[in-house]
Image 1 (tube, rainbow, N blue to C red):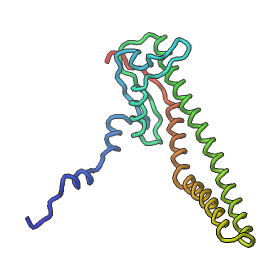
Image 2: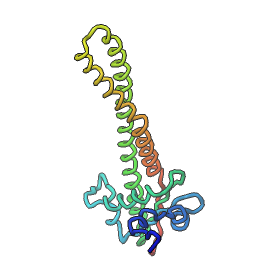
Image 3: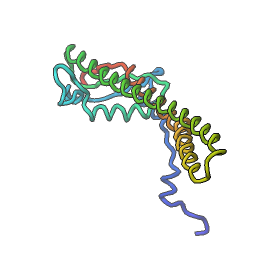
Image 4: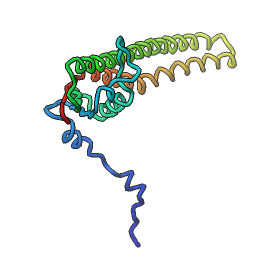
Length: 193
């Protein structure tokens, strides 16, 4: 009883992942990440809300795919392996086109968000510089109390600018890479499993 026993919490906290070896064993072959997905039919892949004009990927299928992609390092290209029944050539084309189409929409949405955030970034740069110049100029002409408003304005812009530069910019870049990887993903069919 002289030694300190580890609590279960400490044991759980100190547990290490073996994700790299797990990925190399289960998913990565020859520098490519193969994402196996077992389906029983086309209804497991396509949303029940799909129409003949516009088909969409089922949300549960998409979530499963995205969760797996998020575990794979960014340097590996992706191949989606659909394990299931023998699909007709027409069904294979529909599934492939739907997955590619959804990925293109995701990439387009991500690019639009990235462009929006770049505009916000330049607005923050302009606001920080402008309010800094205004603050420096007005410091000589305005009393202390009204000047506080310009200090608050300057720090509001500066805070948003710093947050974007050091936190959000990397997140947006990673999201763009993720969407680009998914849009570049190949689809293969493995029949009879």
